[in-house]
Structures are given as C-alpha cells and as structure tokens.
Image (cartoon, rainbow, N blue to C red):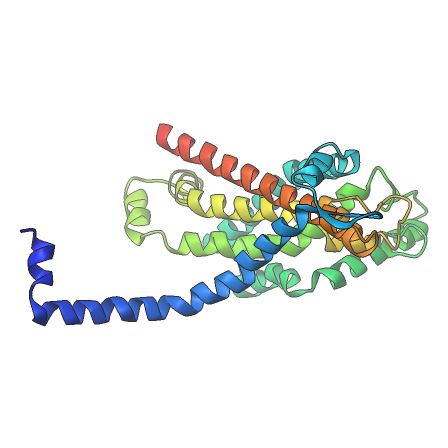
Length: 306
C-alpha cells in the first residue's frame, strides 16, 4: 500500500485534504471563468467565423480553410506583415536599449532627483495612444506643425516627417516615446531584486561601476529583457492606433492595409468582410505566437550555452 493510499484510508486526514482541494478550486474558479469569457470565447468565435463565407447566392456558407488560403496569398496582408516586421527589427532594439540605459542610470545612484527622472520617463505611457498620436502628428507637420515652424524660424529645410520615406520612422518615434518608460520600470524592478551580497562581493574584488554593470547587472537582467522583448513583439504586430490616427494627416501615405491590424479592422467594419477579417486576425495571431516563441526558444538555448 502506498503512502497516499494509506493517508486516504485515514478518515481523519482525507476530509481536511478534500476541503483543501475544494478551497483551492474555489479560489481558481473566478479566474477560470473570466479567462473563458474574455480570452477563449472570443478566440473560438473568431475561428468559427473564419470558416464561413458570405456569398451573393446561397448566403453564408461553410468554406473550410478557403479564407486562410486567401489570406496566405493576399499581397496587401503580406505587405503589412513585412512592414511591421521591419518596424519590429528596428524600433524594438532601440526602445529596449534606451529603457536599459535609463534603468541603469537610475539604479546607479548617481542621478540627482531619480524619482523625478523615473516619473518623467514613465509619464508618456500614461498618455493615451490616440492623444499621443494626435500630438506627434501635429508636431510632424512641415507646414502647420512644430517641426515646420522651427524650420521656418531657422530658415532651414526640414524633411517631411509625414512623407512615405519617413512615415515608419515617425511612427517608431511615437511608439518609442510611449513605451520606453514602461520597459524601464520592468528592468528597474529586476535591478532592485539583485541581492546586495553580489554588489558587496564585486566591491571587495575591486570592480568599478562599469564592470559591475557588465558582470552582475546585465546577466541578472536577461529574464526581464526577454519579457520586455516578448511584450514588444506582441505590441509591434498589434500596431494600430498610431498609424490609424496619422492616416487622417497623410491619407496618401498610410493606406487602410498599412498594418495587418488596420487591414483586419477595415475589412470587418468598412468592407463588411467579417469572415475574411476573422481569418486575417487568426493568421496574424499565429504569426505573433510563432515569432514570440522563436525568440524565447533562441534565448533559452543561448542561456544553456553560456
């Protein structure tokens, strides 16, 4: 007879153990219900919608994977994916490096008024993305905006930041401004969790500030950097608010399919192609999961080799 069977055979022990398990499920149940309603149900409904097509003759009919086949061959969807992939490769490293520099500067203890610095960097995250896009869109204007006014005042020619060649850079600047503070808080919290004993050992060994940052702080920040990178990848593929607002200022540059999210939105609410829009959204979600998992896998393998 095993130890668990022996304990189950004791009536005095089995009842408290059962009550403990029921209490555990009772605590878990509210989260499970919310998870089902807010995450699983919308996903299941989107997948369900993506399996149908609206036809002039016959109405809504089951189409199997036809919408997915169409999405995989859709040039507009592919162009949007490539655009956000380029945005991801360029903008995310810049943003994370800035956030890392700010976190290390605050943690160094050499800044005056570090709390004020931290709040100032974090403040843009509290600004709604729509308001931030309107504000930056006004400043980018070469005729009516702040950049244009400064150029006229200095009598210099400034680039049109709302032109086709500058648009992705301009949107990247908005997103970086908004999320540097958010990522800085993640990294700074990880820095504060490093044991003081490691700093004391480094000081005894004669390590300076740069050596301490390189040998102790950066290795300890790897898990937090991975989390920030995964969040940034997901955010990049969900890019919507900034280009959608700036589209009003530069309609000839930003099309309705500029990003995959904008494409899915316009298919559903302007093109009345609900089923195809659902298929595009599902494919976009799968691409995001695959890229995020690949980054996590590569990072985990690199950690094992170190």
